[in-house]
Length: 301
Ligand SMILES: NC(=O)c1ccc[n+]([C@@H]2O[C@H](COP(=O)([O-])OP(=O)(O)OC[C@H]3O[C@@H](n4cnc5c(N)ncnc54)[C@H](OP(=O)(O)O)[C@@H]3O)[C@@H](O)[C@H]2O)c1
Image (spheres, rainbow, N blue to C red):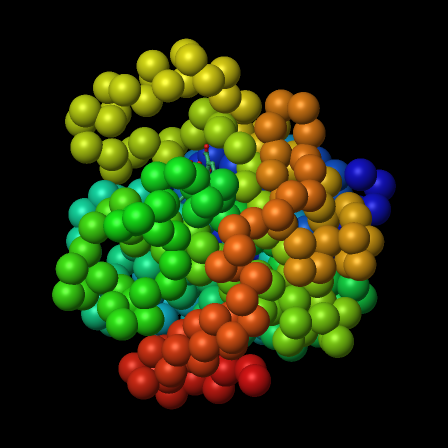
């Protein structure tokens, strides 16, 4: 943990669950922590709490990760204060199980889980490049390859209806968002590896967090039952998997996928589709197009 001292890290989803666990552990280890979450009272409360543990600078930048403008403001504010970024933890993501649109007219599930982090990472290219052996660690999930993804719900990127605007199904698009994060992490590793920026992704395993906050009532009732049967990790145990990745050498993690549980964190294979280089390239280009069509932003290669 000594290696984390004075590292600058930005954590999305830092007001709750795994992201909050990361912010707390990093703050205690003496890193400079920039917490990112929406402008909610719990964001402020958690910021105050984590500041108390800190031996170094902790900041909270309230950000709506479903808004291009808000993400751009976050990147500008970060760059006005810091010239480098050692570790970007892409942790935020909601689980609202119905179709909704962001202020810019994107599908909310797609944007909050995937496209917002694609944009944020891009806008932080310079500070990531300025740090020595920087890392982008993106939470994804095992669910992208579960048996439920066969047949109709096969896990794949549907370029004909990327955001489920013609026909939305949560089962299909939640898996697509998770797969998109893995494909993005791999594509990033191919594009930015040459700048000594490592990109990796992981499923932390089941953790007892606030992930059921927006579930429909029946699932809310079932979740404690699932927890009883599955013996989940604490948010901090989940967070430790990401911290452990941040402690590794870039060459050990770049372009790799890991899965964690109570026994530890292991490098494993993600689904076959996730390794398809042409899909990675296409998703990157489509994502860039979607954002620049709405907003005049200078995104990296
Ligand atoms: N828990 C698990 O078992 C598990 C397993 C595998 C993968 N994951 C993944 O791990 C990640 C973290 O999940 P968690 O379980 O820690 O969930 P959580 O406790 O519900 O935390 C979610 C975090 O994301 C933030 N967030 C959501 N939408 C946002 C938006 N539009 N703008 C800004 N911030 C936003 C929330 O901030 P606010 O306070 O502002 O709402 C909160 O800090 C998710 O991507 C999840 O899919 C979780």
